[in-house]
Amino acid sequence: YHCPKGLTNYVLPNGSKGLSDIACSEMKQTMENLDVPASFKTFFKEANYPVFSPQSTKNLKSIHFAEGITDINTSIFDAFNVKFNIPKAITQLPKGLYEVNNDGKVVIGNHVEGISELFASHDLSIQEVEISGNLKEIPTYAFNQCKNLRKVILHEGIEKCGVDAFRGTNQLEYIEIPETFNGNFDASMEHRAGKSTRY
Image (cartoon, rainbow, N blue to C red; front, side):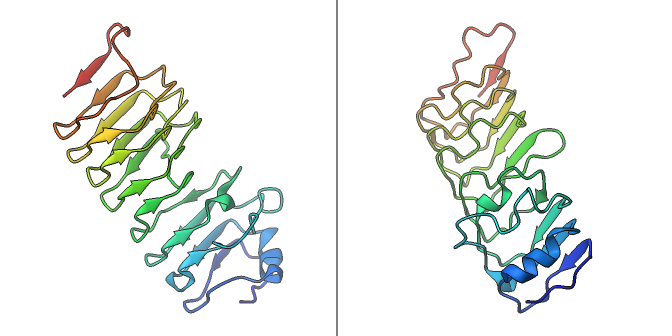
């Protein structure tokens, strides 16, 4: 697909399946918003490096992925401060593929069946996590060293956490644990005066 130069908003046409290096270079300098159609299916899955690098796409603010896209290469978001949505067809979330809203909250919705190890490890922007019950297990180190995390809500259906899933979350004040949960929650709260755990 060939892109015109100088636009701030790019809406890629339905039927397009990829972008050439030339198209990317023509979009980089001025692009602020990008709409990606479902015909892409995967978004730069095979790329070894970000096609839109933070150094060359300084104005990029948001990417909207159409429903129907089934895979996104999370390396394109490395060092980006860009908003994006996660299509519901993506049920397995790799490391780094999540949204943090303006209040510092991450919501893992009902369509998600699995997340990777080290999913959001060391993300200091996260203050609250809410996870739906379709995710049966929170994997090892998923929220490791999220040092500003204060609140965790686990919904009915979640059964266990991997080792050190919430290690180093020293600001954690509030946890809701469902009746379906029968594992260990490694973020010990016994010595945090005034904190609460709800079962």
